[in-house]
Figure 1 (tube, one colour):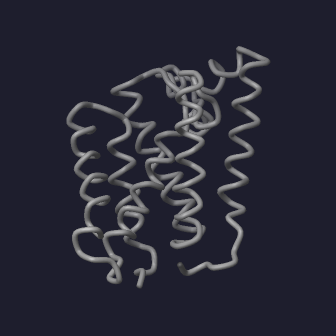
Figure 2 (cartoon, rainbow, N blue to C red; figure 1 turned 90 degrees about the vertical axis):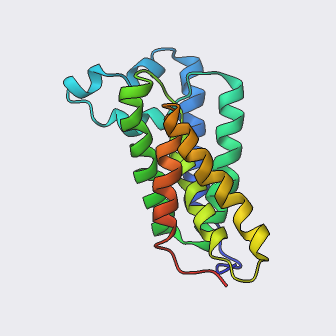
Length: 177
């Protein structure tokens, strides 16, 4: 690991912000419709919703637990081994690719899973480039990730594009040992 001793403050900050806004949606039910992805947002000039949709969750506890766990794990690893710039690029560009696909494939929705999939894709690229790991072990996760991304795209699932985009961004990071 390249960043021994560093604290993943970026991951923690995004986790806390997402937690606060997600918690607010339970106190004020109007938060989700105000921040989620929906086709009218483009026509109404509300492009910011491509990002605010990551701060609320419209599918309940299962979605929240899965997304927050994945953010904590993938976010920490990406931040510590690939760095914060790769983290930001994978989260934002990967997430935006999922939101754009969402306008066509799942017009109404919310949750940070698409952004987290960008992080997972970046992590898979890092794993594929690890020379210190036996070849089979090195490629199981990346093959599952990128093969799964292609299957998701074929099935018009918004999580496919961010996995592949995040994977491409992960290649920009320093090669692991």
